[in-house]
Length: 108
Image 1 (cartoon, rainbow, N blue to C red):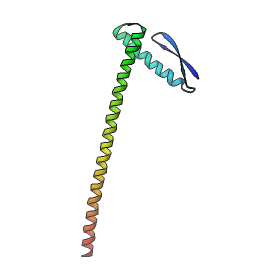
Image 2: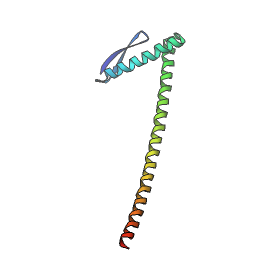
Image 3: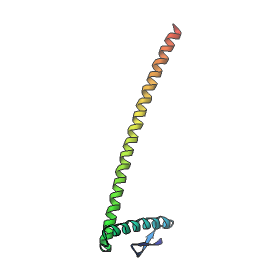
Image 4: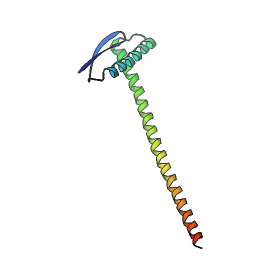
């Protein structure tokens, strides 16, 4: 198991991770640090635990919003695909009807 040292709000933390995931964990650590530092700048130092908790709540809220947006987009995409399917079926039916009329005209 690999380990990565991340720094959040000036404090170092050693985090274990799967081999090969070090870069990803380090990047997430930088994101957490940026969030914690921004929150500390906005509201002041609340104490390390409260600052981390509040930052985690802000990030969890952001994630929940992204999940909701993803679900809405997935639903919209499914509806668009269904509408496309209905439109294609309507077009096929119209073309089949036209082809049948042309065949009748050709026979007459």
